[in-house]
Length: 620
Ligand SMILES: [Zn+2]
Image (cartoon, rainbow, N blue to C red; front, side, top):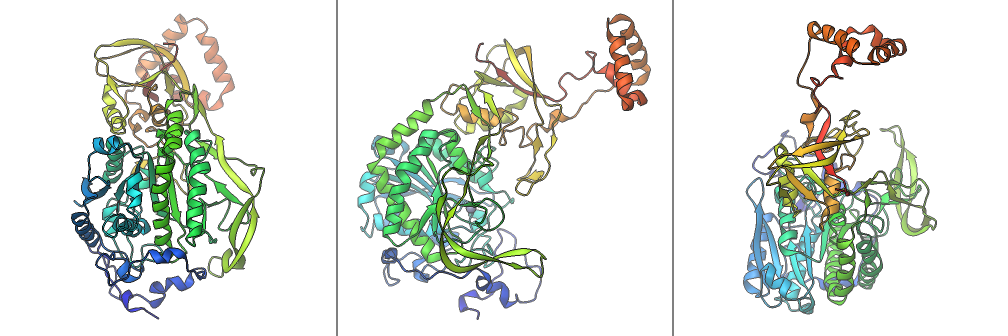
């Protein structure tokens, strides 16, 4: 049956309306929820948080019984009305999208003070939350609207602002939010229409935290620098497997770049939030990624994200960051209410645990290890202890279309003991240099680093230093993988091969950019400038120019030059003859023979495959 609110809608896709065919959609597309694993019956104490639709301050989503979510315009209009009525709230634009929409942020402070200095001077901890970085995953927006109301005009939770301040960005990917239709996410139970994952240029904001291509993430990074929040929440909805948990969350683990913060999230934050959610009838769990395939039979993965992701970025810059993933197969109402409880308890916890959080953050911000891992891979062995897991029974059947074994969930809850695989084995560990020097010609790199709040100095006079450079003989376009195609997020991904370190005396001219690692964001500097780091500018294809040789030599000059070299350079003839004897392809190619000589002359391009960013070793 087609509910009345599911009248087919032509999606408003930003500035352009696209409709590929005139035919009405078959019912099965709109009734796709019947194809999903069975929904679990649920009722919980958090339902009492709902305001009745007759109340003046019911949110647009509450007016639909939390089945639909308001448009950008409706959301902004409702917030304006709330902010006008509530002296504790202010709304500011933190930037504009590609299609010209403001990114709105609500500032909540009990004393009606709305500047970074006033909030910092209040002595209260500051929480930053954004919803809709993937705008089909919009639960956090509707939960946040309810909570802002309850902390102010409804006076139900005014206590929360006595202990903490809040910055709330209701919709981060605003253009994607307006690419709204019933077809945004086939694996999600509501709202009835939802936005799209990527922005107006098809970029995924949650892959953009180091390279900063998108206006949305640039706006977030500006907020981080100007407002200096103590805790940061990024609100999502999952894809993937079925299980009993309705809300999962976590940081980047204990073995990343901020181990003290990782421990605080696990040991202080998680137990308090779990208690509050459970008391309100929710089922909280850790972030869940399947170890293999679609269900949990091979165990689950505890992930350490790279800094392209919000949680990996928070880890790299020592900002306590929690990724929240509501379970996409739970109905919208349950997900929104769980998010409300999580946000409210987070504010309450911050007030109680301000001291322990500040201590953990200070520990990580001041640590200066001599070497750091650039990325982590999966430990092939499971963790020693099995993990209690609240799963849903699954079975396999022969897919007639795919021709493959396919998973199906039965809806029956099962409590399992699962093997846990941690993604915590460092792939490459590098020694942290004293500084990096970026040539003036690569000012775009220095500019992007400065946007992060990294201190970048320009050399006011030339400096001669012993420096380390990487020669990237084995580098090339990275092979496509399932999650990272060769052309990815508007870039050509580069595999650095095995960089060969070369020590040289170099003179760095006036105007070069020097970036010291002895600063709070020093680890991020390393993760952006070491070629072997997955989110380095090199791997994101910002240095494609170095992969072309641009000066040439012809045989008419190389043949006599090679003869002269053989006469004059001791030992060269012997090496040449060895090469001829040992390498058939070489011996057969007049081109390769002459190139072998050319490469040994100063005429050859000394900068070919040379990564231009220098490392200044600690001893200097
Ligand atoms: Zn997401």
